[in-house]
Length: 242
Ligand SMILES: [Zn+2]
Figure 1 (spheres, protein in one colour):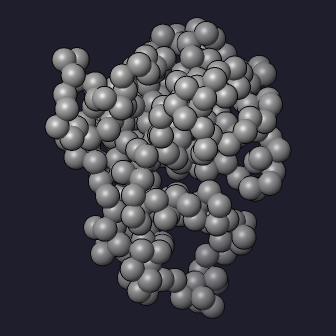
Figure 2 (cartoon, rainbow, N blue to C red; figure 1 turned 135 degrees about the horizontal axis):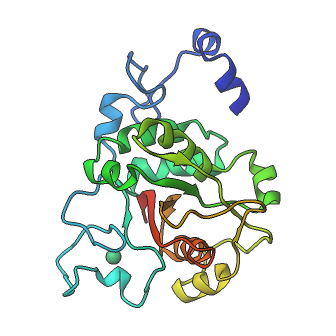
């Protein structure tokens, strides 16, 4: 279906007029294909101030170094993570459709709105965008890696950005969904490797990209892998914060 959507959108649109994924009303002309202006306004956005570590919005409790309670004890291998949305309401539903509903193209519309978040945009500029990899078996099952689509969509739209799928996940791990923070961390601790034949340029800044940041365990494990391979500047980003 992804192939059909990408191949001949004009023809498909003619046969099946598109509705906004949020409002369910017919799409108007505009920069996005499945997310209307009205729908975009319903997305839960993260505004400043946000945690300097994980990007979570501050909700009252502030630690001295401006990291939030969410981050305490995390000590991530990435410097800073920025997320434009909260994984709530329509954002959560869209991400669910992307991951489990076979609609990877919704990434493009969510990422398009994400770029209107100035901090998110600046955070990515000039960086090497590295998607969180899926295990090959999982990717075959799903037909795509949504994190890869996020990074591949964003890179050509930002000055100085390069899309680089530098990491692989050689073994399957169990789903993080039902695990607590410590279990998540242990589950992915040694899950990632530098892809064969790939090298790190210590002069570049790397941003690991995922669709959702929940505890930060996956982004941390990916960042630790890049650092072990020689990267000095590693940050992270996700479309939504859980
Ligand atoms: Zn935080």
